[in-house]
Picture 1 (cartoon, rainbow, N blue to C red):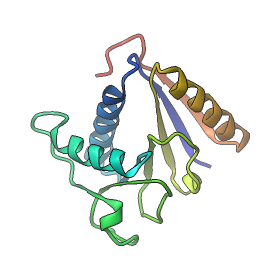
Picture 2 (cartoon, rainbow, N blue to C red):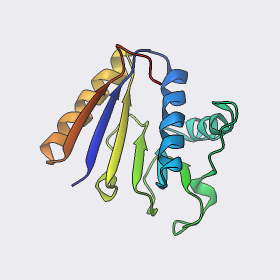
Picture 3 (cartoon, helix red, strand yellow):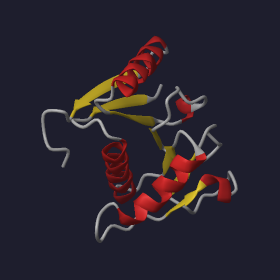
Picture 4 (cartoon, one colour):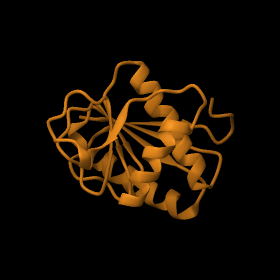
Length: 149
């Protein structure tokens, strides 16, 4: 079973959600984890690729677009892709897509970022119910009442 962490964010804007995703990617990378950052679309993947280089001054997170790497790549610690999860050797999946990604249960850890946008909250509730029905270990991290640092 996968451990699923829902991060409830204070803001309702996409950029803040993406920046938080970049911070979580960086933290996982520093801890030695391999990460797959699952985006909604090709445009989102490209934007997240750029943001990972610039979200924080002095940050360095080696990453590539999954579409540019073979599925068996064991070198790049962070891959970004969409819309279908590829077969990658990552132990953390950060889901920024609207739907429950097929194959998510191959990852020991899944992170979901939920902002204050009503649509995002509703989609998150749907995914939460699906994870729960599948018997996964669910955790909530409410960052809406505090600074996300």
